Amino acid sequence: MSKVTQTVILSAGLGTRLRPLTDNLPKVMVPILGRPLLGYHLEQLKKCGVDEVFLNLHYLPDVIRNYVGDGSKWGVKVTYKFESEIRGTAGGIKNFESDLKDRFFVIYGDMFSLLDYEKLAAEHDKNPESLGVAVVGNPDHPEDSDIVELDVDGKIVKLHRKPHAKLPERYKELLATYLFTRRLFDYIPDVNTSNLDHEVLPVALAKENMHTFETSDYVKDVGTPERYRAVEDYLARQK
Image (cartoon, rainbow, N blue to C red; front, side, top):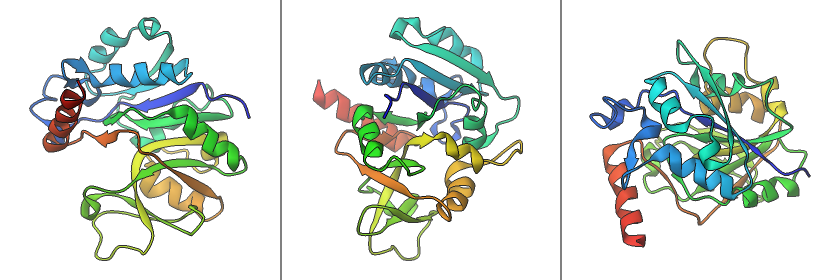
């Protein structure tokens, strides 16, 4: 299989749960130990062989453009798409349909990730006919996490949206990081707004196989003040 060299980082969100940090910053630009979150993404992706990054923008777009520029600081090429109205997670990916190759990564920008993306691609190499691979882990807070129910082979059976009255026998937390093939676009509707986890993937999974990749790499949501501080505390301890 060909190397995966492209990534969509979904960056249009308002980051309302992180206020006041996001009063004057997009959520992908909140500082983690003094460095913008987005910079960590670009650095890690470059280490793993990615050389093209696609960013959808909406809230305070110039803050992101002024920081990232053309991406040459990280050795990557960056392409932007401004959304006058937020198009949702699937709509954000669809912005770049004409630019994306056979396989590409998708990252929700409010995740902090030290994932080895080359290992994620290798996981898809084992099942190249599948729609893609979702990165999963053991949930710290399953009651308010979107989770996937799995069969004994690690194939996704069903997505379960939070909150959960009852947890399935085999489940993992979705870590908002994926590898997809271009077949994903067969399932993204041609509408202004659509969401990946809640609308597109449930339809796709009725027809497609999709597997999971469980990682011990540090991948955490920073979407709330408590989780943001936990990431900073973790990185400070590593130093």
